[in-house]
Amino acid sequence: MKIETSMALMEQASRQREETLALAESLGEFVREQAALLGEQPAAVWFEQNVTLTYRDLDAQASRLADSLCSLGVRKGTHVAVMLHNSPAFPVTWIALGRLGAVMVPVNTAYTEDEVRFVLNDSDAQFLVIDDDLLERIGPAIASVPLLSAERTVARGGSHPIQWNDLLEKGRPDFVAPSAVSRQDLLNLQYTSGTTGFPKGCMLTHEYWMIHAQNSARHRRPPEAGIKNVLIWAPFFYMDPMWQLLMTLRLGGTAWIADRMSLSRFMDWLIDYRIHYCIFPEPALAHYPPSERDRQVALKYISIYGWTEVSRRAVQERFGVIAREGYGMTEIGTGSLVPAWASDKALLRTCGLPAAFRELRLRDSEGKPVADGEIGELWVRGRGLFLGYYKRPEANAQSFEGDWFRTGDLFRRDEDGFYYLVGRIKEMIKRAGENISANEVEAVLRSMHGISEAAVIAVPDDLRREEVKAYLKLSEGLTKDDIPPSTVLAHCRKHLAPFKVPRYLQYMNEDFPRTPSRKIAKKRLAADVGRLFADTYDSQNDRWLP
Image (cartoon, rainbow, N blue to C red; front, side, top):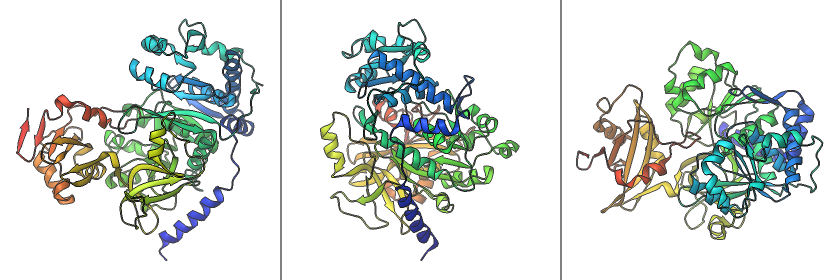
């Protein structure tokens, strides 16, 4: 039996033992347990705001706020929209709502009035907690939401009558919720847009989050690691900061939280705060060429998404840390991760083995199992999955087959049981009847020297229905004269079947449009219909389009 196969079987046994462990019944209970254990140890530091909360502070402030919110009328099951920047107010509000059994609806702070109006109405938000600068900007949208009012709006700063800071000060730290909170109660309505259509609210329970915290901590607690300092740089209305904070609390560590991502300060953060774990953005490697400062980096474990093998090897050489892929989504939490022992596998584009509480299967378009090595849609089931999309019966019917959730992502599995992401079904490009994975083409492009990032989308074509267009961001200091289309296309033809080679190439003069979590906003590239072919090289006709 191969060593990898043997270790994978041991990993499976370890997961089964993990699934027998008792978990906290709710978010509020979890925070209280950790506060009792760790007391005055720093739980989170907002280093740009010079604010530190200990484990006891976090617990006590959540209780104080819960008490005051209860006095305003927030109860178990109440939907409370939260639109806050990266400040202590966000996690404190989340835990307070969880302690009450209320449901938090995180709202993206970059949303326009129309987007805010949609989420507040669709989620049936009854209360709103918001930063004052945002309240001024999207006030008209709030005024049009029937379940909201000034008496149900809590502002942080400004002159609004109900102030978050006042509620925090007036509440009692020994607050006990009027209704018991259980693991099956809703904690979040987390809106996710997927690839098309209006956002959908994922119904996430307390159990979902407790399993997410446990799985995240388990895989980042290898015996030799001792991870204590965790860097959080994404906005808290996204999933990553929330599970990273819970993971940090579960590890008994300290979360170092940035106001927003900054590539120009990223290396300073790693060094100044002795960061042991973070989600590492691949562009940071190129932004900081190798130097003597590399020796000051204390990283012990990093999470990556879609890196090239060159970057994976580079981070090992420079920082002595293994970059590990994983797979998760709002609907399922942690689906798979690369175990600590699988160092060689981590160099490949694998998402690892199933996480505890998660069973994974690959199915074809008819729902039949596919063999190892073949491509199929990933189906997931297990304890603590999301309960479905809020008020979306049709989407739920399409997404579930019994207790199996259909992810919409295409994977293959190797003989050792490791899973590899091929691409998203809705991001597959269908060119003259051939299916092309945008993910695969992007990986080939990014493996080429001089290309730092790439985004591949489908563009309309009269003859083939869809064609492949690639957007390229070159390494700093390089231009399209240094890496002309002929060189790019030759590289693609060497590594891709002819039908997968992009017809269109566009060089990015500026950075890609991005989400606040630094992912390339491919939908925005595709949405610019009027300029979809502007400044674009057409390889079929060997010419630049105006």
